[in-house]
Image (cartoon, rainbow, N blue to C red; front, side, top):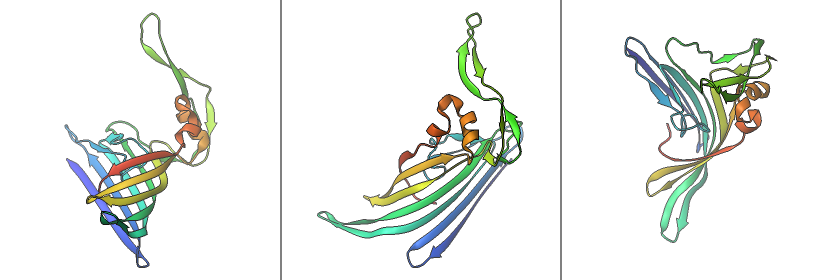
Length: 201
């Protein structure tokens, strides 16, 4: 059995601005549950395409859309205008039978993985753990978020998007621990450029 809910709300701001909100929640259970894939493009900007997968998944998207140029007169005729976007994304996914916590605000101790090594006898790859560190403050645990700005226009009838995204877990110290093997919060929060073709929600 599968439950798939998708809700959207649009609020006009002035004559040309628009606030667009979307929330989607997916849950599948039973002997042969389905999976939901999402990520990248207009769902979770700043993350890889279809990076998130799970039996239980969901994401929230908020966009403020506004025109920059209504239309462009070019030597080949009038082309579609250019629209700007401020956006925020929040989501996560998990598998049945595995713990999932979107966020936490409680103090805890966390032992990060700082690298990997291969056992010379068994040839198995083992994780190398760092020092246990106390963590406090609000943070996303299994959830992920991003925010940024984008520009959209139409090329031969297709909507083309150029986005600049910043990923965040809302806690730099926590990001340093979770992504210790990938450069910590400095690399995780580095701006990412995305290009995609498709319609908005």
